Amino acid sequence: MIHDDFLAHDAADPLRTMRARFALPDGLVYLNGNSLGALPTATPERMQAVVTREWGEGLIRSWNSHDWIGAAKRVGAKIAPLIGARADEVLVADSTSVNLYKLLVAGLKAQGGRNVILSEPGNFPTDLYVAEGAAWSVGDAELRTVPADQIVAAIDERVAVVMLTHVHYKTGRMLDMAAITAAAQANGALVLWDLSHSVGGVPVDLNGCNADLAVGCGYKYLNGGPGAPAFLYVAGRHQAALQSPLSGWMGHAAPFAFDDDYRPAGDIGRFQCGTPSILGLAALESGVDVFGPVDFTALVAKSRALGDACIALVEARCEGLELVSPRAAGSRGSHVSFRHPSAYGIAQALIAEQVIVDFRAPDVIRLGFAPLYNSFGDLWRAVEVLAAIMAERRYDDPAYRVRNAVT
Image (cartoon, rainbow, N blue to C red; front, side, top):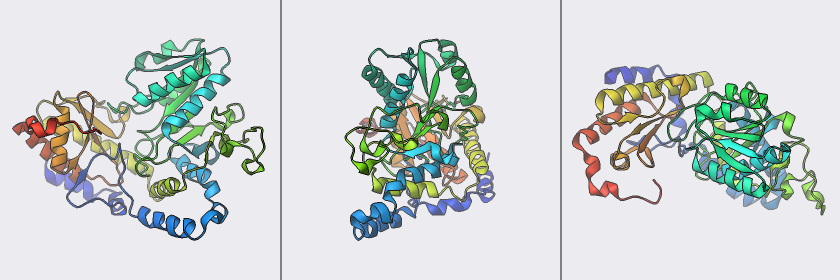
């Protein structure tokens, strides 16, 4: 592998023009789109229009004149093709954690007699925390965890909902959605997929897998900005039977009738709760719109090729790093992770050299690839810097051992 080979990959990349749609600083290698996506160049202008014209001039009239009231469903419909769903099965609302709670409680309540949420240890912590809270809220319910390869065997007559993350946040391992969904349903359980590290980076086909429920965040590969609203998916066949435990006015069948009694909307809208964040929705919509002209087959192919090249290059040039991600591209998401006892210091040394990666406790470095704007040249530069850091043990610098509040 030589530098010219990587440049040739970039020259032949069908997505190479997409980088210009993002505001990335010159000289910066950004391999952290799996945590926070880059700023689309269209977003500041869109936000300015919403703030100055729609809010500043239109004021409250914009709920109608600019369809603020329809934004949650409209943006959800734009996300739907990225996850293999129908437009009327996806809604943007609240945060991933809140949506997870809503769907877990709804699933538990609908599965009379079943009272277990089944997941895996090491799942993204908030998913486990929320599951504990959902079980507590319902009462006679519990969270049970078993290793991922034992999930199917553990689905018994008490399991109401199987809650799993499609692409593991730390290792990048991707689960077989179709097989697990089919096995769970055959045993009477619903499956709730967390797509936060999947959507916009790897193929997702919820309807093709006959999926039940899903959630996902808007600020990673969807480039919706820090704290962007999240989305939820409820298969059309379940929408009339499942009811959100957060029965806020926006989930009412007629919010502006101002009835005293709650009557849930008859569609995906029943999973709304409070007034939607219009500024957050506008930024997310701008990020999702970037995918409009993208050939998703090309995007997935590039994601996998970047991951494969990363593994090969790091293993060829860097001593002491242990691969923790799957080697097979088809079993891996759009990030690659390595383990090292000084992982935090290595990440900080990389960031000091304008190569942005992230660290996950206790000892993992993640290199995330957003195919819309990351290049093979970015990867070459990142590994070049990483190799120097490892060879010179720069990570031993005491300055790189001081933990920031956000790691």
